[in-house]
Length: 140
Image (tube, rainbow, N blue to C red; front, side):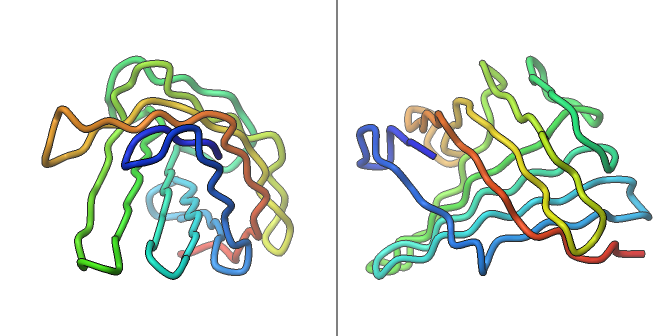
């Protein structure tokens, strides 16, 4: 993905596929996707969860229980500071292109605008986000 904010200007963040995965929770009827990148100085995570277990395209314009929920968590290892960014629901979208059975892959694209939960003047813009992750067994 490409981000602007948190000291970055159109910087490309590459996720480590060995640490990233997704699964379907049968109790909540939701899919959870976790993307992780771990560098020498930052631990970067993007979390999505959405209703169902299939491929789809969704754009959020307002927060709500049926909408896609996403969060970006950045931990600066140098000062042990963790910053949580929540979606602003402006041009925020997630498209799932492939949703295989457990053991296969979940592939998708995403973008959006995110705001720092502790400092509302601090924003992140994400574009060209894409992933192909292993789908783990369902959680019951």
